[in-house]
Image (cartoon, rainbow, N blue to C red; front, side, top):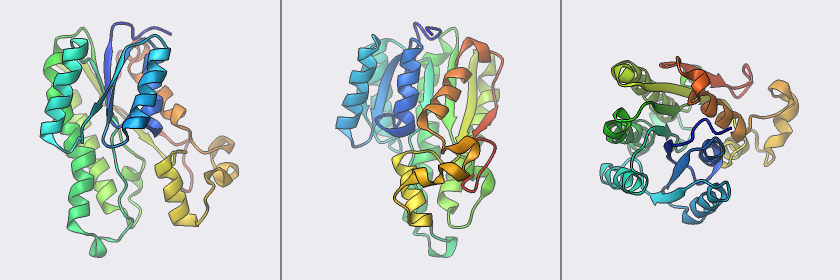
Length: 256
């Protein structure tokens, strides 16, 4: 498919995992892509090479999304390189430590919320002037079904994702008049590095595939499942969708 021909995407946290899968899917559909990473330059470079092999333009930009200064530099660099940004995926995220509220370090709470919610606010705000100048704009927030399950031991993470969704639904109403769609994609457990760490912490198992038999449709969710949902939401087929949340969890499992 080439229905994103001429569009420029910025995907935060896209050197690995879900972000990488999204970046590659958007490139496959015709977009040029800016790969944001915080610390793993090698992984980001590999993702850039994979996109270029598809015949699309790509760059890697280092920035910690919880830093306003980093975000300003990142957005300026992407616009200098490509001319504009009309597709943003706020994917960057970190896990919390699984402690109860009584035992949570306030610094952890601030770090998790700043990365997921405040960072997404910063980057969205910075791309809006460019996005408003384009025929169509899309902002996708990668949330989690944790924001509806509210399991004990996850307050920083669930608070951050709930705030991210509040941002999305507010922004969808604010930017509708400017031709910008804003939607939320909420995965359950996904076979990524973060997902494997979660499974090990909860079950002691080093093999996430042991959960395939008890998962919806006989397998744990894959990064491509999330990427395919994003590519639908930013496609012409989803032209009339905004302010929506899609839970990508196979209908629900023990992990969401």
